Image: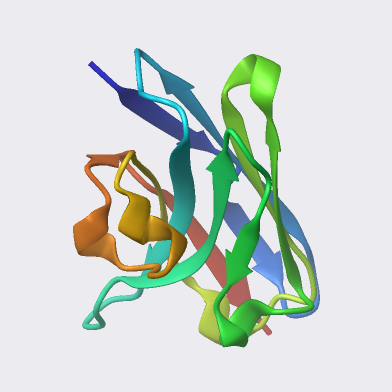
Length: 126
């Protein structure tokens, strides 16, 4: 059974930085995709970035390009999200997710992801 555990959320001022981590345990078929999603109150869950394990291609939502960087540690099965130049609109619950579905290479869409972490809160204030 695949389990995902996020860490690293918190509160930061506008312009600040945070680094999220997501550790995957259990068996998952390679190649697979891991992504970061976020959901603000009253909003739909949206994709932020994703990375392929068994490869290294990445994808970012336009809203975070140039500010966020997704990376991984293959040996630790861990995904990271470095978030710089944070804005108030980045405030949300951030979720890590994983999937073996190949469509995840094309779409950063929550329904394509089968395994989810519990989420970690990111709050950006001025």
